[in-house]
Every structure is written in structure tokens, then in C-alpha cells.
Length: 162
Image 1 (cartoon, rainbow, N blue to C red):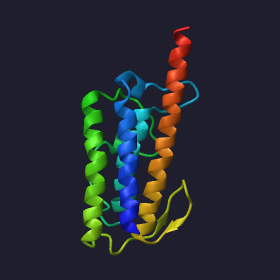
Image 2: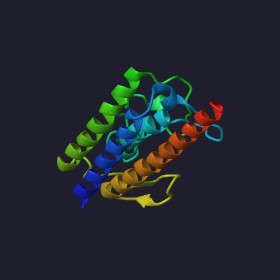
Image 3: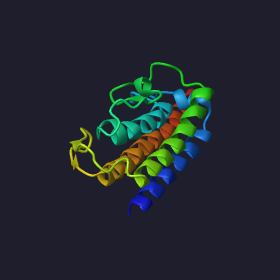
């Protein structure tokens, strides 16, 4: 079952990457009326959050260095322009971090975790497999936000050109 969860996470991230690659940097950074973040922030957020959920929150590697954490952690909002270079790094990290987590899982790194619950879902996660399931749900939640943001960006652009 865990192999299937990893495949769905990878596919969600591939879909998210395709969404981003179909947009210009202005669209990725745009914050439409009624929103507090942008497509780039949502993408960066899933990249950093998964590492935090799997390594830090489980106490497996509580001091793990997570690139871009301060920019994309829960509770943050976009404060800086996401440039093409940062976006490329995030796209690589989206893939590489999941592959590393999968390898670590196969190597028993997550054999013992400290249970916790997230504010978003409120359910106790006492196995790493439950953490992976929440990761999948969380990634899809933010892909949904990004899809709504894309629609709002296009609608706002079309209003400006009328």
C-alpha cells in the first residue's frame, strides 16, 4: 500500500509541475483578489512541508535542514518574488525529496516515530504510513488551491484587458 501512496504523491507533484510549467513567472507570483498567497508559494509549501512532517514532526531528524523553510512554512505568505532559478530548484526538490523519503522508508529510517496530529486534519498519526497519507492529502489540497489560483489569475487578467 505504501508503494501506491508514493506513486500518487509523485504523480500529484508531476501534475503540479506541469501546471507551473504552463504559466509565466508573473502568473506564478500573482496574488489575485481574495487570496493571500500564490501558485509558487503553494508549490514551495508542499516541498518544505513534507520534509517537516516526515522528519521533524516525527522526531526522526528533528534538526533536519530544510531549504526554503522560512519562505514556505505553514503560516507564511509570499513576501519575495519567486524567480525562475528558485522555481527550478523547487521543482527538483519536489521530486528528490520524495525519492529520499521513499529510500529512507525502505531503509527503516522511520521505524520509530513520535506520534502527532496536524492542525489541518486533527488526526493522530502514530505510523509513518499515516504521515505519508496526510502528505498525499496535503499535496492535493495545495494543488487544488493552485488550480483555483490559476483560474483567478486568468480571470483577473481578462478583466484588465477589457
